[in-house]
Image (tube, rainbow, N blue to C red; front, top):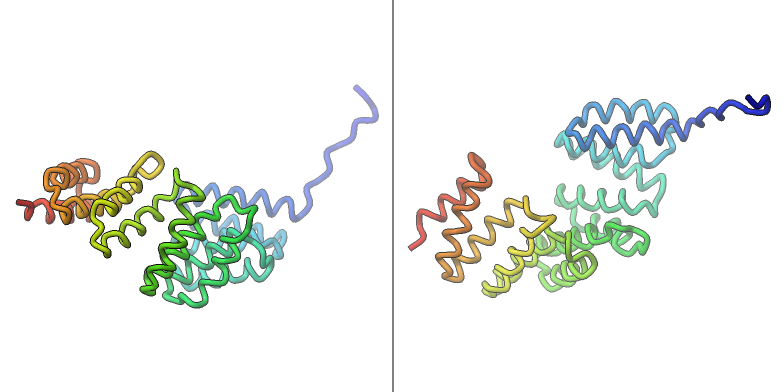
Length: 238
């Protein structure tokens, strides 16, 4: 054995904090926001200036339906590192949820316009939703189109909201096409899109397709709100 071999360097406080954030994010994926917050408290004790801690805390509080605390943490993450694309997108989404649309635009644009952000389509989608809710439908469509062009395989929610825009314009077949795309492959479990597709078939008088879709929803999502709504539509089909 070589006498020159040396022990591994101990981890720095920042490295320990990053490892704890990874553990916390794993807990979030497993549906354990309280466990995540416990790990994030340890991470914060190691390095309170690490912005990833506060982004993950925002996600954990959002999972606990504590929007007020989630907003505080997301704002702190962005304050520590203003170009942080993921935190800016999360902050924008939380502000939309809080109905603070004007304030949401700026962080969402930071995320959407970052050429290195792999999930920029999420920020583009959130901008589309924001303008949809404000009734600015042309701007909404522009951002939803950009989201879809950016990541057509995973832009489930962008297809869904673009379907809403098509439906508002009485473009029933186009709406049905978008809702259908919102239920394909990666998006297959998007129950609201399945329901919207059935409604689009119903409104375009494609009653056989509507009936088939509503029955499929009952089978796929038994004892859920979506299944109850599908049954309500099914009852009134000719």
